Image 1 (cartoon, helix red, strand yellow):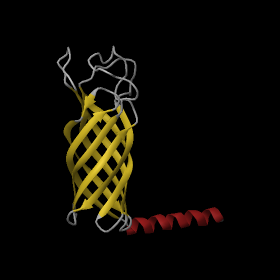
Image 2: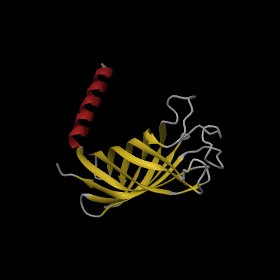
Image 3: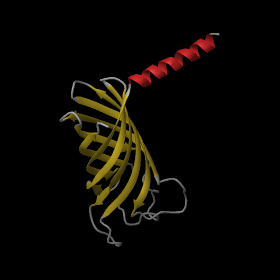
Image 4: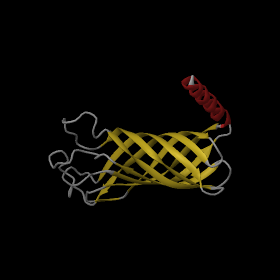
Length: 196
């Protein structure tokens, strides 16, 4: 009997929470400042763009699902024998974020992401299937509502998976490789929520 009552309570609670939540779609775009850890490189500038679904449970808390296209990589400090002066990796990124309003217009975002490599100019070995085509990492950032539906956001994304197989035979044109070669991304951009 207790199990039935508990199940009934959970169903009623979920239905009431769903009834009180408000879902809104939005678009986001902006500047990527990216680099790769543990190589002789400097920041590369590019862009990101995407869409999101925000489920507003309370005035202070929103759960946000995002699908983004993000151009990342690093700028190499000198040209090489292959005449390549940068690493470029484009990702299709899925994120789940918690958005908490600290004060009326200022919010904190944090969560995790899973990226799928859709393009790069790296030389790949045949020793792996998924890696380095996937990246998993965390996001933390701040945003401010400029007007009701428009926000200015600054975020930091840090990858947890090496972006390529670290050995001189696989990437002969990248100098000073070593350690964990993970993505480091700072994003600055705008997000707009639609009313429909």
